[in-house]
Length: 328
Image (tube, rainbow, N blue to C red; front, top):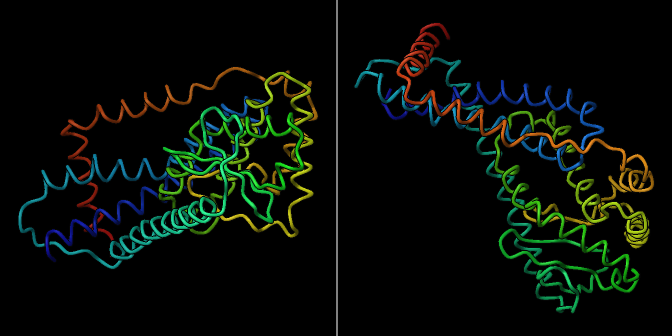
């Protein structure tokens, strides 16, 4: 077998194996964290679930790029007479399928986001609404759109019927909710999540982590928009109810935005309202910050410290050679 083709098959086989293992671990971790983070700050919970969501992709790509490929290039003899068995080829096909499915999902979402952004921009008119420097456009849309679209040059689109229905206080807190997404760079995080390969996402088994993360994003944006002000919490509840009444039924009209957020998500409406109305509950919530990023950076630093280790590369190479000989 050609050396380059053989290396590609091995890399994809390792990718599938590591990604599958990390995907199962992430799904189990997400399930275990679901209840334990119920009383954590929404922003902290969102950070934790975001890291868990990216775990399979980061770990598997890191393993291939930083461990397997350097070990193979350094230790594999030139023109070695080796060939991949059926098992390795099957694993390589699975690995390629994961990457292709991820690329397809990201491309479809990016295309939809670009399309809807262009359509909305053509149909909308600028509105003189203070949104922290973010341009606001009124959209003559039949759906109650309140969406922040874009990563580097975000724009806020608000349906004219929503502008007409909301009071100034309701509109202010609704805009504050979308600006909270902007300050947390949630649109960028959505892009990274869509581009992160995850075997279980292909069959829907990791959807719990994805759903819990997106749920935490909305809770966190609500909490930021409301602060400790009970009046703002009631205004946000009122805005959600009004927008929900304007929404057609069944509620499946929103395009999934790769780099965009929707103020109104029908599936989360009841949970968000319930949370906002229980003022004493969310005021008493644990405000201890979960040190997600320091822990994650420490883990990556530890892994990076292993890169120059000849022992690690040799171990990876020996395991690879053993699998080539053992697997059919």
